[in-house]
Length: 564
Image 1 (cartoon, rainbow, N blue to C red):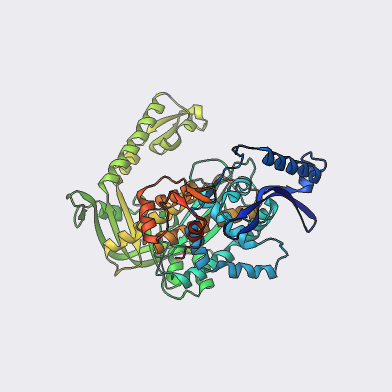
Image 2: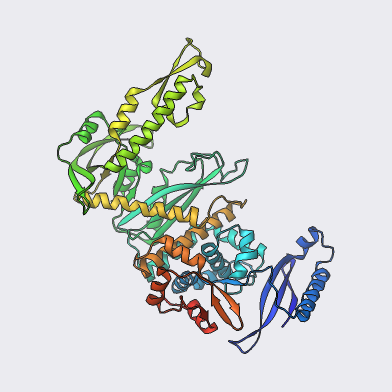
């Protein structure tokens, strides 16, 4: 078998690639696969190669000559390992029958490449080896078991296409997930996060704002909506300097409009999204809400109720240790809002309020507070400048030493004992407010604490899928990048919750997807994955040879044609 130079003309470009012919045991004949993608002739000329076709034709002849003359098999610059761990996502993607709908876009575009291949390969590559798009194309996609025929420029074009209308793609997946698995929108969980970009200047989309990592880089925000079963059903991206509070209204309205959701939905979110506008939005749409609320910002009469020891009930573990204490009340509470004309109104709404006290959380918070107080005390003793206090400045009062002068050199710091005492007193308390007055207090608590799943989804995006930092430049490709991350999380969640019935953690599942690899050797494959309990149990549950050392092409094919 030999190498050959493939010259492909598309539109105004000529693409070059080195292909390898090989004998296929499955077809009992010769097949071809891409050995190395070279790019366009024009870009190769720009890189300094005067005649790319002649240059790489000579390179192919040299490679064939070396192949013929080599008596001993030598190592290659290309790893022989093939990723197979993406097969569960492939099975779910095929069950959703997404290709059928993506193929319809052929009628409205003039792309000469397969849009579905771009989408699916990017999802598979993101789950097995998340990295830059350049490395994804040149190193990861060629190491997937299946071959794909598109260039790097075409990959970026496809990514831009998906990013330009990402909400339509989310809608398409929701439609198919609802059909194949069902969606439950009686409760929806919403939260926001942001992603930073290592660039110096802002643009219309990447703007500086409050960063979750406390960085000063330009950021973009991302809102994520989950259904009652913790399945992602909505995503919205927005410039980093915009408030996240209106997002929950926009995303839920969009979800209901696009999917004809008419049932009552309880909006669940943390205190960052708790505002009168979001509460009135839920009420006006005959929906409910369940938000957390800052105890520190309550009126004094409500703080007094929170701190009164009477009526608290304890929830204990099996050993009798108190996990948390809680109490509840139903009453009318005032909310202030501004109408379209700018007029302020105060409306009393009937709510259930559930306050909890967590001893472990209280100890942790008090430790953090005392640490900040100690830092503030040391800084004030050393006459540090106001700009050096950072987070501990909330426990300091800065008093001017010279009347009418506001410079750092003319102020002295005094510990704010009232603020310190209040924070220490309220440490460990959390307040939940809800429109669902008939919901049991423990159900309110448990429903709210399912928000950890949305935090986990963000962690998967940021850590396991390396969604940050982002090095893409165009807004459409940036949105396309996050769409790929979102869809990867969606498919992983479907596998975790709908196929494996939440028996395994996302950490175990993603680790398996990244680690499960094979190496081709003498018309068979060697499984180079390190065995563990998860693989053994998954192999037994799926009846797949995941823990076999030797795999035939038929067995590998069985993996890739696995049905869920």
